[in-house]
Length: 504
Picture 1 (cartoon, rainbow, N blue to C red):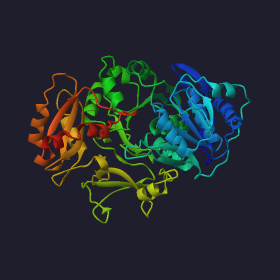
Picture 2: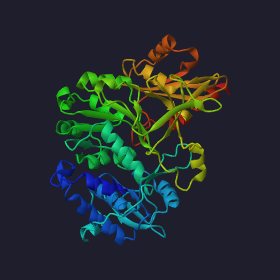
Picture 3: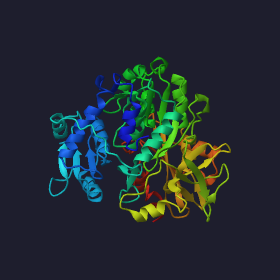
Picture 4: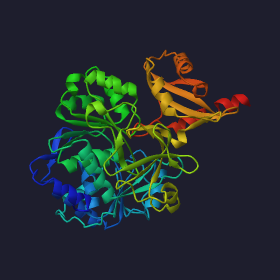
């Protein structure tokens, strides 16, 4: 098996030269037979711009076929791909440029980036795929060479969100990405008969390393759209076999009357990740379509870690299934961080070929996150059933300790989501003068006149007193990141003084 991920993709696409590889906004872009030449022109452009093996290429733009060609060209050159959230400010980009020291910055002309100066070479790539990089690529003969690399050579650096401080760059090797896509291919039963509807941002691991990679590895056609649009997705679903999304995508689809059982009938698989899927959404989706959404668990540092089973009967709401082939997972706790028995909540640690090499130029952060036996401390808490199935309780930093008792937000969020009229729930802990931390429930509701007392009544009926919210707030919407995750750090900041101010 070739170590360069691009060479692996090309090898697996053999025999499918006439099949459409990419479609964009409803039109074919290229076949698998044409793909190497399309990528090769961008390889030639990168070489002309001074990119060599091991160099970092930073990309800040929206989805397009040219984004895909650029990404594959970077890897084919033996260079390192560094995607940035297209919404980052110029100051955020400057910080990451200082860290990664790219030789080339590719960006949309109108996007926020630091002023050109003594930094890297610049090239433009617009959301529609045009720009100076594409123009240069079109003027050159394809360079079809794929640089030989070691399996442990870096393929990409993805910066974490940095909610706990300065962003850290997870160093993903070629073998991390090849082993993970092979495990997903097997677990989710992909084949060259699939067509994938791709509506996820490709600056994120979900869109880049899961949806895109599975299409390229499986020789499955990727039907790409610029971004998620519920009406467009409904119109395209009958022509695909697989759809990958985040929970927000599924709630927006369920809001549409034209999202029917007939529309979803031809698909074999709906996948959700990047944020917890509420059991209430799982149930509503199954009732509407007959499909049980397959939820999985992953993170930037390890791409995909666990998955619910492929057979629909094995998909249990509120759980994330079992470790992928080759991945080890344990739940630890106590002073000695020993492995905990089934059902007991602790910290999740993982080890496997999917695990990154550490954090770029952050040896201290790497040492803090990796144990002496190679297990990675994920920062997530959860537990395993007796048969090994994993349930996530929440982030370690989201754990609430109220009056000396541990409160796991996920338990409360799942419970309160059962209340009629509740659209979404976020449970946070804020400082409290008597209890250390107080539980606060934040909800969004479909009815503007939603009665917050319903939360309090259910809590009193179903929860121990220390778990019951000491305040409930109904919000119009939650602050979210690009992948739909609720930004709890912002919510904690907003309500931080709720009880301490009163005490003062």
